[in-house]
Each structure stands twice: as C-alpha cells, then as structure tokens.
Length: 262
Image (cartoon, rainbow, N blue to C red; front, side, top):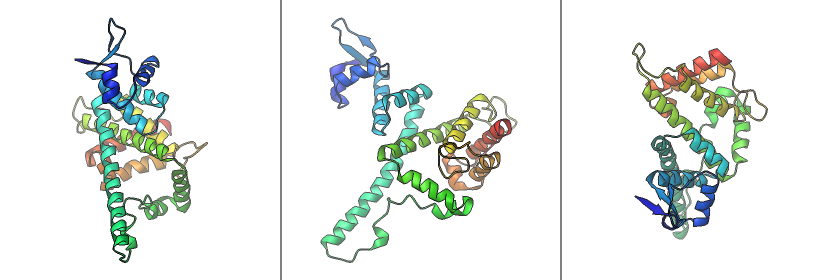
C-alpha cells in the first residue's frame, strides 16, 4: 500500500511543496512516481518521514537530519531512543504543568505560595553539588554557562543526540555475551569502539569537562576510564546503560579505547 503526496501532506500536517523539497535533496525520495507524475510513498517512507519530522522538532536542520538518518539505519532502534527521550520530556513537562497549575490555584485562592512547590521540573542544577565535589566549581560554572547559553532548540538537539548515544550503547551491550562466551559483541571491536569515539567526542564538546569546550583536546585517559568505573559503581549511571552488565560493557569499551588512543 502507498499514499499520494497530497494524502501524506494532509496526514503529516505539512505541504506537498515541503515533501517535494525533501525528495529533491535526497532526504525523502518517493517510493514510486505514477504515470500522472504524482509522487507516492510506502510504509518505509512514512517511517522515515516520521523520523524527519521528529528531528525537525528538535531543531535540526536538513543536513543534520540526513547525518542522523545515514548514521542510524535501524529505524525501530532509533525511534525507541527518541521515544525514551520524549517520555523523559513528557515527565518533565508534566511536572512543570503541575507546578504552574498549583501556582495558579494558589493565586486564585489568595493563599500563601509555597516556594518549594513552584519549580518542580524547572531545575537543571540538581547535580551541581556532586559535579563540584568530583571535578571542582569551575567545571560546574563553565558547563552551566554553556547550557544556559543554548537556545531551546539547541538544548533539545543536544538531549536528542545524548539519548541516541545511550540507546546505541544499550543496544551494543545487549548484543554482547558474558565473558568467556563465543560470538558476543567485543567491547574492543569496531562497533563498540565507534561508540567509544562518539562518547569521547561528546565529552570533548562539553565546556567544564576536563579537556572539553572549544579548542579542547578531549578527556584524559584517567578521566575517560574513570567515567567507565563510575558508570559501573553508581547504579544511577548504570541504569542509563541497561544495568550493571551494560555499564560493564561500556567500561570495557572505554578502557580499550583509552589504551589505544589516549
């Protein structure tokens, strides 16, 4: 089954002109072109369009979207990562909505405002004390200034890329097997090491991290491998990688990368 360009434009709340442009730049080619010259799209194209529209909503430009789609060809896995990010955003927004609703109710009733109830879902500083303890006040200050200087679209793009990286780590870890088993994904192999490189590049882009920020050379071997140890030791971080076993896989991959490159 396929759908005409007019049908897809209506269903996706976009325009035929936009869909033609996506096709002209190679982002969303039609599945077929009818004898009447109309463009038609099948289910595979619809899934691709759904991903394009979600990435556009994160603020990515068309070149960035194409880069993401070219890099992550497993649509189900990519959508799963985006779904996890959306759920996190939904939870955060639900908390903000509840906070604002409570404030409105309190104001309408002319009751005393409770400051501790007014900012749920707004705070990005919950890890401030821990960051300062681990890496110093300057690390927090630089990272905080960088984050506050981002636009909403830039923040959403960054969070989307972070969610995708975590999802790819979880997928790689789940493909690995216990030590001594055969056939599992090797943390020192090409796929895991490509993820380790993305982890390194991600850290290098963050001002405040050792070696991070504009002109930064990236994390040192001690810092990079230390993060791997922290992912295993702290259940909060291990959960990002699917649990202790996933965190252990990430630690092994980071160690192998550091031994080769740092």
